[in-house]
Amino acid sequence: MNSGKVLLGVLAGVATGALIGVLFAPDKGSVTRKKISKKSDDYADALKEKFDEFLDNISDKVEDVRGADYVEDLKDRFNEFLENITEKFEEVKDDVSDFAEPKHSKSKESKKGFKTATD
Image (cartoon, rainbow, N blue to C red; front, side, top):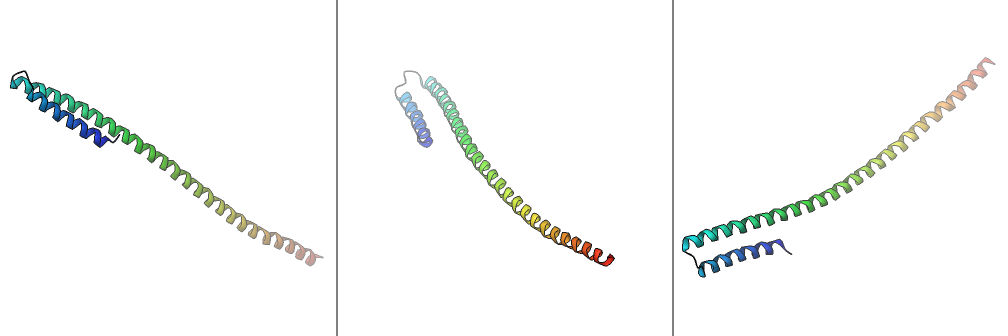
């Protein structure tokens, strides 16, 4: 049920009750006004309570949605992080293998050259 409709219904009920109470009041005007004031305070308190419950409910739902979005955002960021780390690892692995192969070849060549020179 739409909360705006509930609020409008409560306010209409309060106004109707006050009007009927004034029209058909068996008591004096001052007593009737006190009763109306007390009832309107009671209705206002009930209305405030319902409105607070409504706000709490909406806040909980917003937090649930926000939390779900936050978790999804964290998952996306973590996956991006893993992809970046994997790419960097592959780049470093390629650089290291490129760097290590020539040195290894040079050291064999230098050993061959050294043996040839000493032979």
